[in-house]
Image (cartoon, rainbow, N blue to C red; front, side, top):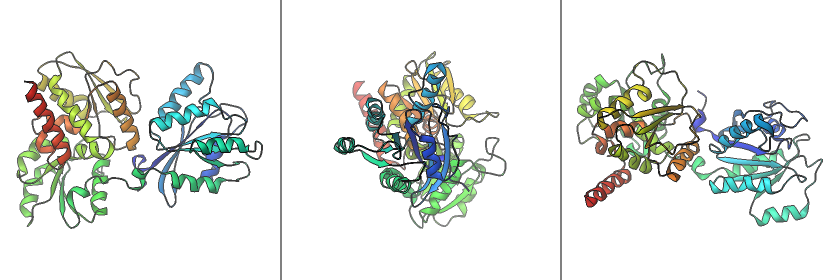
Amino acid sequence: MKSPKSFRLHIGLFGQRNVGKSSLLNALTSQEVSIVSDIAGTTTDPVEKPMELLPLGPVLFIDTAGVDDEGALGQQRIRKTRAVIDRTDLAIVVSNAEVWGPFEEKLVEQFRERDVPVLVVFNKTDLYPMRSCMQNSLAGEKLKTVETSATTGAGIAALREAILKSAPDDFINRPAIVNDLVGPGEMAMLVVPIDKEAPKGRLILPQVQSIRDLLDGDSFCMVVKERELREGLRRLNTPPKLVVTDSQAFLKVAADTPPEIPLTSFSILFARHQGDLAEMVRGAMAIDQLQAGDKVLIAEACSHHPIGEDIGTVKIPRWLTQYVGGKLEIDSARGRDFPDNISDYKLIIHCGACMWNRREMLSRIMKARQLNIPITNYGLTIAYSLGIFERALQPFPGALEVYREALRKRAAKG
């Protein structure tokens, strides 16, 4: 099975037109991934190339259009390029000794503001040799630089090595999904409903990733459907360390799981794994402040066609309406079509983002935080609106304390 994009280090190539970004990507991957031409602006949309970059592992290279593009169409290309910035784990700013200046420095500054590692690549060194004064200046700014020529292959090996050394620690030491909550030699019971949303003959991605994560942690797992949970628990000599359920089955699973066994959902696991669980706990509590007529944004990373009782378009809006006691104005966003202006929303509810890398999800959380807009996710929303929030947070002491502290502050305010 191929590694999903969410597990790949996202490496973006940025720079002005015609500095050789596409040629550099082709040289790095040893494939003709991007179209190369002497005509500036040949790359019109981001081009993605997944590959294994040993010994680092799975990566996703993203070749972008030049961010100095011109005209109305050029502005559209620039917007797409800037969207790539939000999901970049490692930035490669490509230039040459003739064009480096304020434009490139502004690019570097944007990545540094996001705490994204930056590599500066001076390409076309066969045509534009580096000047010593420029090397000294960049060294003084503590920027890692590599000199390459995609045409001759010079410096490509050094660039690969620099990428390996610049990979963020949180990618190399990727946090667990669930095995740290279970432990080696212990068991988790996974409750997996088989409904219309589950692809024929397969499990959905968070379930597969959780199973693999448990195996990587030398933990056991038992997989059952929701109506088989009681019988599954009865057959065990030792209770499981954790029960994990699909959020849509929360109420039934909570009723069938003894209170002494910790319980949560796949979606809440991914709120921690892909995002910021504490921030999303605070976001879920904003449901109490919703009033009829308020605008709520429900965002999904996937762009699948809704089927039947779809969780994002049908079930969550219904549960929220029942909780609030009035009709809400609910908008939907799918894939990367996230609104530029989110200031009118009283709450943003996001899916678990299992198809994305963590940085893209954190970028959305950051945008919401900057505007003081609460953001949470599907599992937390469902647990809160169904009245089982505290139980769903039981496996996460830090997040549970965030919730209890917020309750104490509410009580103090009267």
